[in-house]
Image 1 (tube, helix red, strand yellow):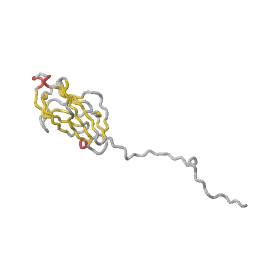
Image 2 (cartoon, rainbow, N blue to C red; image 1 turned 45 degrees about the vertical axis):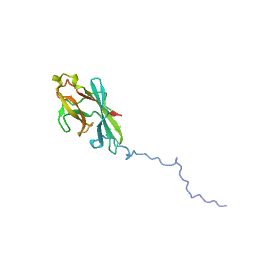
Image 3 (cartoon, rainbow, N blue to C red; image 1 turned 60 degrees about the vertical axis):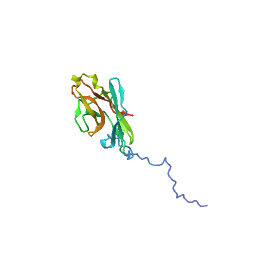
Image 4 (cartoon, one colour; image 1 turned 90 degrees about the horizontal axis):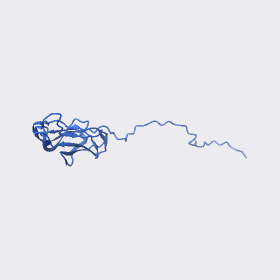
Length: 173
């Protein structure tokens, strides 16, 4: 009986396979969570709530864009005489806890609470009461203003001892 050498090769086992290094790759499906830009945000006034000596004005920011983005910090808020009109008194001062980034998926919302002091709490001479038609709002890290109708009375003075508006950082709803 004649034996023939086996010329077939066995498939290498995984133990015999050469080691390969994995290199990190960029995940093209990862969301771009850079700052939200004004064009992808809708800004609106939520349900106003009264409090002792002040009114709570929730400013709502909704992501109307098609990418996930981040809001980080405080919006700019001030009373104005009319849409596109002049600012009335000082802009809102920052208050509340530390700002933390809020990631907004498309369709998601966040809010910033604004406390509006009832200006009748101040003396007429100090406050210089003036009619306002609404608020000018700048989303965090944007330069485009959004007007929100909110007729009320503000203080015309720019005296720093008069705090007519306080704004908190944006937070998840």
